[in-house]
Image (cartoon, rainbow, N blue to C red; front, side, top):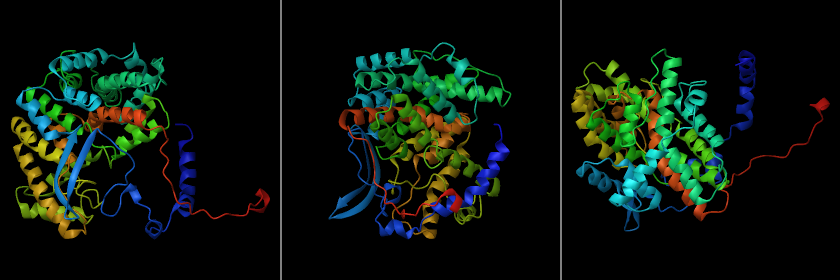
Length: 452
């Protein structure tokens, strides 16, 4: 980029000025009753909308008191654990029927599911030369940025880009759901070829394969995968597909939809939210932390030694010195995250197939030790348990999915939830979302340029 040193020097020069004019006394937030992060001290979110898409339960009201309970996640009223059991018992893939459920509110019949699968298959199509002209141009290590660029560029190929009729929005959403794996994996291959010097693979998706199977087929040079690999990836996609209207990227979807923006811009905004390390990038930090633990703990089978190192991490004396045990705790769940508990059993099976059961044992040990360590060291208002990010990164590692694709995999699933929330927002709400901010500005007397 031209003049980068000059711009960097200017930015450094004025950074202190930014702090001076922007920093506020933190006590003012409490004084004015501002709920930072739109959550109160107990972690309860500010009520800002209604939804019929999903329900997250982490506590129950008993005798007028809020009591933590095992976490539950319902998609359109169905417990996600029951949905998973249904397609696992029938030896089916679950992404497609779960996507149908979230979009249309009912579980599909066999005929409806076949029709939906066909729609997704024919929608796995990119415009002529799109890979060459868009994805292969200016490849980036940040595949989320590459994915966002591709989504925004697809708007140029849509003659009805700004039509907000529900049938048109649904069409756009179905196309994006279908092409997200292609945009992401091709973006990675372009980066891996042009920036890392490896071979460049562009495999076409197969119509008869599930979304999970196609992801692995597109990614791997030999297009090969085991049934268990595909089934575990499919499960991870289902568990990441939707998580209420209050998570950051879904709320972003609602906010930008309320402004009347087009589907491509809305999804690009949601992607920009998801890529943050506090949201969709958390599982990468878990993997990095686990590698750090294995490098620095002499005997990872010794609980006392592992616990001592976890305390060092919490005291900002190890790993990234931020004092966080990644993959532990959640803004909503306290006793358990149902996504983590559902995924864990299948992680065990995959670890056995991959010969990585010792790694799984370490994950299980830390899942047990970390809540105890955190509770002994920190004042917390609710329980701490492993969240879905704790195990999902391990899954992606075992599937040989590169770290650059961890968050895009999340996006391949969550695009379904975003689509459902966008449609719900457009159907029910006709006002732009505009929260209030307390202004602390004091009026100043204007001075001419010569007098300043």
